[in-house]
Image (tube, rainbow, N blue to C red; front, side):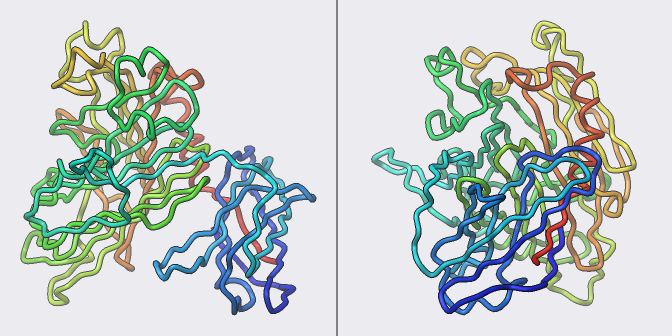
Length: 415
């Protein structure tokens, strides 16, 4: 996505701009993320307290986001529905007044980073940070930061694994405020979703790992480990994992930040990873990492698989995918039945160094660019979804279009 500055009409206490959004791809796009940064406009010299977005006079839901943590918003975010090879113009108004929209918006995003406490209230926090040797896994409710769109849910463990866990659901709605990943028997009967993946020693779905001696490695030697909520609202959530003072092979030392973005109407995560080398004398440009998907159900028997044969692949173009069925919690088989899921990861080709396959995983070995950063995308489906994919054939057939879609974001031009 790119933003160009043209003309802006402004007054002392408000700014109104025209934003042209273009879908250059042949296919229609629904709920396409659009970001308008204040820095790309004429100088906004007042505290923005409200924003309104309209298209052809009709209000479009939006949210103001503070991305740099200074408690002042610096971006407007909204979602666009645009046909293939088409454009739309949106009017974006920023105001110093708190103006309530006339349009009531049901939240399509949920974000939680919570502590366990003696009163079992699970208070929300914005950041958790601890020495790398401190075990907070069971002190954080849901074991890590948790995000949900109206389609799917994810949580990322606060421990050396940093595995991405998955929540699949039958209906497209927000459910985690009620189930908190621990769906009860009565909730299951009422049609709520459930945790759908057990990673064990596998890479799970899109988990980011170190790569040492030809295999994935957990983040064990870390000075400081942290998770934080960057921004959240009704339409978008961005959360961050960070590991400071990571010690790798050959005395390599660096800081690492993983930023995860989830949008309403999406099942996929955008992952941006950045590194800051701490020892200049050690070359960082050749450092390798990995991500990928596990072979779901490969260790299960035919009774557990329910006819879903484990299938999958990894391609040098940057796509890894699998389909299978297994218990989502090996310790609570009597509570949660086996779940069939499809997993996928797409890494743009410029970051791909190699592909590997082992007994449990389809892996993409990746390398940062010259700016010490990389980007990739994670997605999954659950067979339990009413409007989803229910076989390996259907799931794999959908991934080529998904890969192309995330590679072709809309173009945003401020006029």
